Amino acid sequence: MKTSFSAKILILLAVIIAFFIFINRTGYYRNLKNYFFSLSSSWQASLWQAGKDNHSFWTGLIEGRALKEENGILKMENQELLGQLAALKELRKENALLKEALKIGSKDDFQLKLCDILSKDMSGGSLLVNKGAKEGIGKNMPVIIGQKILVGRIGEVYEDYSEVILITSSKSSFDAKISEKETYGLVKGGSHLSLDLVPKEKEVSAGEIVLTSALGGIFPKNLMVGEVSSAKKSDLEPFQDIELKPSFDVSGLESLFIITYF
Amino acid sequence: MLRKIFFSIFLFYFLSLVQSSFLAHFRFLGLHLNLVLIAVALINLFLKDEEMGFISAFIGGFYLDLFSAGKMFFFGFYTLVSLLLALFIKFILSHHVKIPFARKI
Image (cartoon, rainbow over all chains, first blue to last red):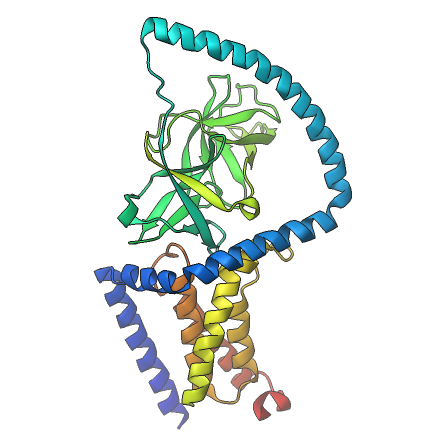
């Protein structure tokens, strides 16, 4: 009796594996997923919003004191930045006038598509958004939030939905540089976001801003990736061990922009 | 049996929705809580009906595959993980553990 049960299980497993091989080879799983996403997208959107609100509430409650301190620091930083902004506005005006004089167009304008987040993958490395192949979304298109902050790139594309592979995912790696320096490296996701292949001779310190470079060809240059949280040098390693802090928090996000053309 | 299967289909659909959209914002001890796999483990631990345990594992895993934005290695990965979890629990229970109440429910 016991053997027959084991045999049944084995046959069942073989049938299931055969079914999955078929569905993976034909790509039929994309249609199946698209159907299920269409069926549940309205509930997913409401649950995502509810989760976001609850997360903000509990985080506020738990981290109240830390937030107060952070708020004070941010206010000071804000004032400093306002000063810098005023100076930059003047420079922008001057720059625009010079560009007009030299007849150079701005190359930083992107074609963007707004999309809403529906869910986050169990692995935490990707998001599901409500724009897909029907809206002209394609694989590897960069995904940003306002202020040109890089979030990730498009992975799997379904008819009405797409997967966004976050830069913090272990599937993600791309070229980047440290702002205002000619120091290039490879940003890699995983357990933490890191900047690899930066030689020991280069000076890198905490707080420096990391931007995308045009080297890899996937992302437009000068999108903000994050800031250096720590940089360590070892005598045994030719490269530095640099950890980055991403400029976005998935829990605070609701909408994203997909760059369809740059 | 059919009623239990329908119940599992709705239960795991609800759990997958909550997990992928609501609980995705929260971390417990630095980890995302996987309600579906926890439910599969509990069902296989405490349900007497062995077939139902495997059916639940299949349904739960299949929903995890459906609701993941991309695919982990291949479509069906979570289903196989869930079925292997059920098999492992059944194996441990039948060979190494004697819990009287676990068999009576």
